[in-house]
Amino acid sequence: MIKLFNSLTNKKEPFVPIEEGKVKMYCCGPTVYNYIHIGNARPPIVYDMVRRYLTYRGYDVTFVSNFTDVDDKIIRAANELGEEVADVAERFIKAYYADTCALNVKEADLHPRVTETMDDIIAFIAELEKKGFAYEAGGDVYFRTRKFNGYGKLSGQALDDLQSGARIEVDERKEDPLDFVLWKAAKPNEISWSSPWGEGRPGWHIECSAMIKKSLGDTIDIHAGGKDLTFPHHENEIAQSEALTGKKLANYWMHNGFVNINNEKMSKSLGNFVLAHDIIQQYSPEVVRFFMLTAHYRTPINFSDELLKGAEAGLERLKNTVANLQHRLAETADMGAEEEWLEKIAGAKQHFIEEMDDDFNSANAISVLFDLAKEANIYMSEAQTSKKVLNAFLELFAEFGEVLGVSFTQQEEELLDAEIESLIEERNVARKERNFARADEIRDLLKEKNIVLEDTPQGVRWKRGS
Image (cartoon, rainbow, N blue to C red):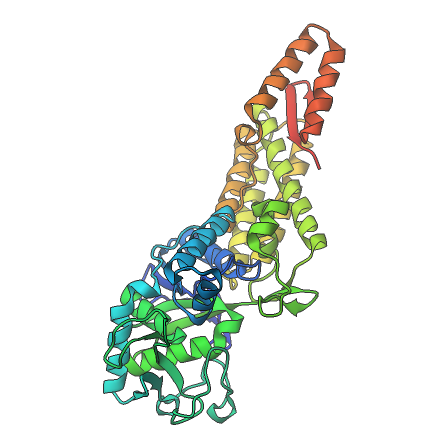
């Protein structure tokens, strides 16, 4: 049975979905005013892995992740660029898709946008006002925080100890300093929508509550996001959603740890960030994803070239093992013993599942992968091998790769373009004609193109150079 750490109860709990065999999952998406940095890339990678594993374990997952496409930061960026808010948002939504696609993050089943949910947001706020949980002041609408019994239960702080967090504006018109804004009156020349309280736009927190309710209903199985969203964002989501429906917003809350640089949280405000689309030019996106999964999702992960290079080397070892399995499969005479090795492979699969069942521990699951590679290399050192065993190894690597979103297979057609294929063929002809000078010349040329050739009794093999 899958167990996950529930931030709401601060302990690991067995995962029991609302509806047997189905999972409703929501992950807070980006505010689209800039390119995402590598810290912003961790939640989509982590929760894509969680989604993949839940699917692997037989669940029918409905995964929703939003875009905040109207916000103070987007408005500020639009003003600085002399562009429309919608144009800025659209550009960075496309950039987000490009970066996350490169990182092999599957698109959500639904990607709702704030601007497409405005009627639902306004209706949500109006109902809160009707129930006495919200009040209007000068065109703004605020949530009565102290009226909601249990405020602070996610962040674990007493109400009087809570401080106004990010994006909660201090306003003398508030009945209480901890009341947070649901609707903001429009400022001059600012994008706005008509509402019962006048022209304006929603506050940050109400947007996710309305999108969850519209997309997934009153109560969902899993609500996920970065640790930095625990307070005030997720705390406020709980308050306004549960005040409206009288039902629990989410049964399980998941929060991933920060990505740090020099052990300090990476953030745009601190200026110590690395953009995702820059780092995936320097390193393979697959390496970046693999690096992210080498740490448990709840632990901070320190970002450095040294650690990325270590992840790159580790991934290359796994890929080389798979390449060797494929090569051995092509040449094997199918004479080796099977039963003992098939049992070892089945044991590795069970071990992988046990680690992933324990709060999606990808770090330990990757350790299982390296153990599997070690066993595969021991097996291939035997004089006789079996196609059935080789295939079992390959199938398990592919299975694990699908869960983690990382391929351990190098496809020649993906790595060799027409020019290199032509050069390899020319080299084969030169060798047959005993023109070894030309064959060596082509080998050196291919080496310059980062293709290293290996001559074996079974023919020419290649691999990426370091």
